[in-house]
Every structure is written in C-alpha cells, then in structure tokens.
Image 1 (tube, rainbow, N blue to C red):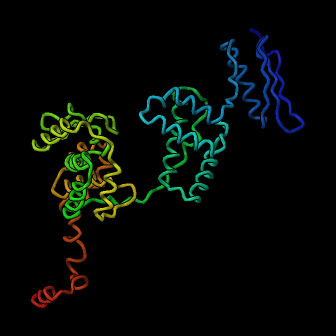
Image 2 (cartoon, rainbow, N blue to C red; image 1 turned 30 degrees about the vertical axis):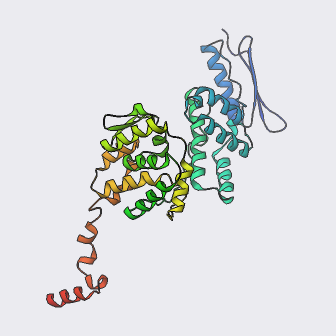
Image 3 (cartoon, rainbow, N blue to C red; image 1 turned 30 degrees about the horizontal axis):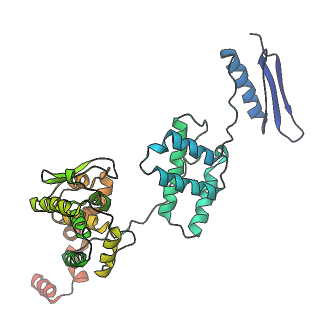
Length: 351
C-alpha cells in the first residue's frame, strides 16, 4: 500500500466542493458536498478506512422514501404485531399525507408543521400523539436492525400534553336500569357478557372471546388479552355455573357490542365518547376502590402493565385526600365556609 495517489478537493462554480481522491491504487472515490469541511472529512475518512481495510467503500446515501422504509419495518418487526394490518394501514396513510419524503431528509420541523395542519383541521391531540409514537418507533426499529445509519429525526419531538378524560362509572341505580334494559332485549348473549365484564373488570372483547375451557376452578381465565399476559379472575360458583350452562345451551358468545351500546342509550345513560362498553370496566374498578380495594391488586385484576394507569381510580378510595378537611383552612375558619344554623350555634358556644 502506498501513500495517497490522488487528493483533490476543489470548489465548483455553483459553490459546492468536489472530492476526488485515490487513497490507494485502484481505490478512487468521488463525491460532492455543500461545505469544504464536509469534503475534508470525507477525504480523511476514505484515506484512513482504506489503509485499515483495503476493501472498504463508503456507503451510498440512503435515498429510500418513508413508504419503502415502512415495508422494511413490516418485514423486520411489524408482522409480529397482533394489530399489524391496522397499524400498517394507519402509518401508510400518514406517510402519504406527509408526501412520502426521503427518510434521511425528514426532519422534526417537517413533522411539527404536519401536526399543526392536522390539529387545525380538527384532528385530536391524542391521534397526533399516536402518529408521532408510531413513526418514531418505525425509525427506532430500523436503527436497531442497522437498516438505516442516520439518527431518528423525531427523537427530540415531544408528545403533546392531554387533558385527562373523565372516567364514567355507574352507580347502583344506573346499573339496575342498564341490566333491566339488557334483560329485555331479544339477544341471547349480551346480558351475560355484560355481567362477566362487571364481575371481573375485563374488557368487552375478553369476555366475548371466552370458551368453556377457560371457565373453571372458580375463575375465568383470560388468555387473548391486550397486554398479552394471561389473567385469572375469581368468580362466584353461581356465575361459573351460569356461564357453563349458557355455553351448553347456546354455544359460544357472538359479537353483540352494538346491542350493548343500544341498551346504554335506551336506559338513558349519558356517557363520554368511546366509553360505552368500557363503562363496565370503569364501574368495576371504581366500586372496587370505593369499597376499600388495594390499588396494586386492582392493577393485576385489570391487567395494566404499569400502576400509573391504575392510579386513575385511586381518588375513589376511602380517605383519599381527607387531610384536606383535617388540615385545610375549613378547620380554623369555618364561618367562611359553613353558614348553617348548627355551625353558628357551635361558634356561639365557643365564644
């Protein structure tokens, strides 16, 4: 190996800098850069790499667009996801709205501008946070598999803060109205599925997917869960017998989510958007905490991966923040807050 046979860095008429170097014989590299500094670094890299590894060659610039990278993501990682088809469709539509840019040229600024337009069009912050998470995860997977050699352009983009949604739950009177309506409906499965959801805190799809072999030993065993973790939740002997008898007479449950939504409406229950079938899960959790249940036990019952999600129900526990009454200003300045005759009589006695 000899010294550098050719080393030429020159500025072109358009202001760019051209590198034409031959670190060792028959190993010649040419490339154009915007700045002289980039050109010098490239020339130095070529010289050092070729001396260390004569067969080394600079990797050509990755010109693949996001849709092509999405295909690679699907092959390397996405096809192992349970919701792959839905996720892939959502991401493809997002990339098409972005104009299918070249991956290495995509920037945080471009996504921020795209997000601003979507928000102005009425798209929710939650949806935009989901899109950010999906696209950022795509780049992370490709980096982990060394499919791309540039940093994640969305690494510095933060999700937007969201207002916590009200978690609606039903009191005893509302539950009586709802189940009276469910029992009056001409459908063989909907009332029992609702009962299972209320008794165990499971998701509607988990109850609807039960089979006889998963109802045994005084418990229902949920296998196909959102978290991919199986859960076994105790039930009463009466409910276990009722479920097994139902399966023997009527077969497996069928999809009747729409019937439940209709029953909620007919019972006159007003619930936040998207919480109709989930209201039974919220009701179980809310009553569990109000009756003195343990927050860590509730986490395992609901199948939450993190207790942070379960903490949404902590405020319903007896004694939650009761120190407000004990140590807050109402203790020393009751006349500001309580003008009842009884309070006035007690104040006069103290005086």
